[in-house]
Image 1: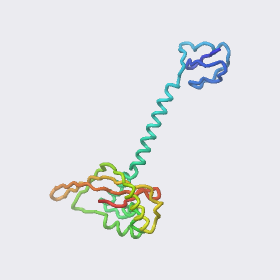
Image 2: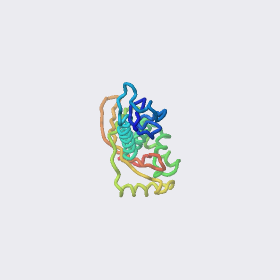
Image 3: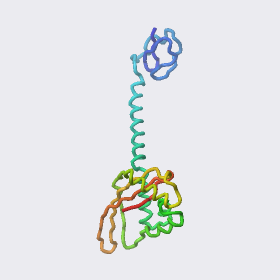
Image 4: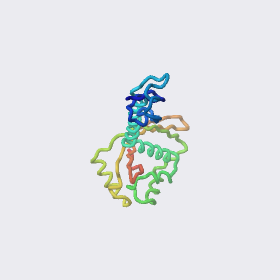
Length: 199
């Protein structure tokens, strides 16, 4: 004999202990459960009709997060941080963002001095325009160059992404503007995105 859930009205066989749709326990297999609850129509699906859409939504969100991770979401963030540090003349942050290609900490700090802009006469702004994949052959060369820095091994470099950035400079005295596009090659070294090169 079939019985019905007193909560959602879903139909179940006599052996069921809980409702398969909403999880409400059946008090017994007696007469109290052999008819639908008052005002509740028998439902074969109950909460089950929501399960597939919820699973699909969760899967879509995870796919988006995975795509961002794979195709440069972290690289974009690191590129922004590097650009801001260069514009503000923050040498320490620039040095921390530099790839091991440039050597040890002291070497990176020395090179950071050349990258820190800090020009009081010019205002610099930028926008990230997207990312570009790095070819396998280029990635191999990048790994070798990082290893030649003497701090990391080739295996420590997992991936590389080119971040396309539009840079605008404005002369504070004349108001003249100039816009150009550069690409920052960012490498993932031991889990952290670093500035490998730019052009």
